[in-house]
View 1 (cartoon, rainbow, N blue to C red):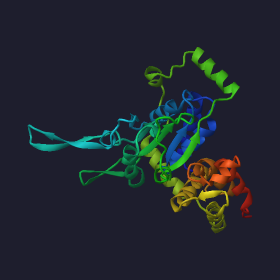
View 2: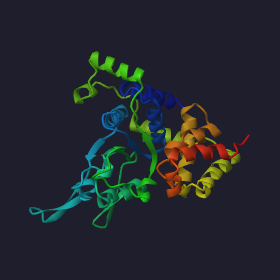
View 3: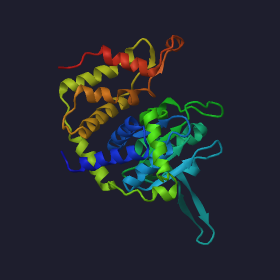
View 4: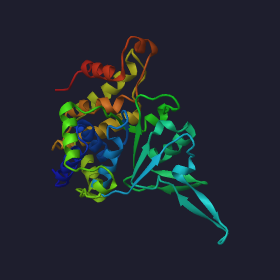
Length: 316
């Protein structure tokens, strides 16, 4: 396997030390980084969502910008706008925060649909259009959005068209008692999560290495039997009696790439059924829509996904 794999392993380990108790979220976030897939981090306040993204950006030496999304944010506040200069009598582009390598869209569901839609083109086509001119975004361009899982008043749920552009929805839960104890010990020992403390964190990867890692992931092999298995899982989501909306073709392609990234991180150049299963929950939970009667029966997306994984035969 490529030597850069060691650097990605170190990236996961360092993130896990700073944001204690979120090892599963960290691992899936690194998978998303290798796929270039955008991520939603959902959890209650104070669980380290923003800290996780800021530390990750610093560890890979990436340009990082943050947008605090509120009801009064406009699309131009995200993508930018042309400003008329009276001195030169010409328009000058003022780039918005979307022109970066890692964009943190904080509390994305607190801004209206018109502003949310400003990210649609950027997330799918890696470009934005301002006054009819298409402008390219950096090769690494990666959106990580956060949202509170409990508050619904004053929020605007993301439409399915935008949710489908996110590779993963990762649930950041409360840490276990042992992990929270370690968090307290770290704080007592002087660990600071403010700007001054984070400045001492040393990078373990470069942007160039991340892009090379993505190239290496594309070389991971997938047998025809595994391809049939993955396709059968996608088809099953569209035929399941408890689901009103199944996985899209975009989701199927994302599932393929994420399975390769998971295999590569586990030091293999081939995909196994376990790789496909390992990323099923974060990949599907925000894309599937349950029928009303299924919701009344107390079912949730994660439960349906687990049942689908048990229903489709695994290739030998």
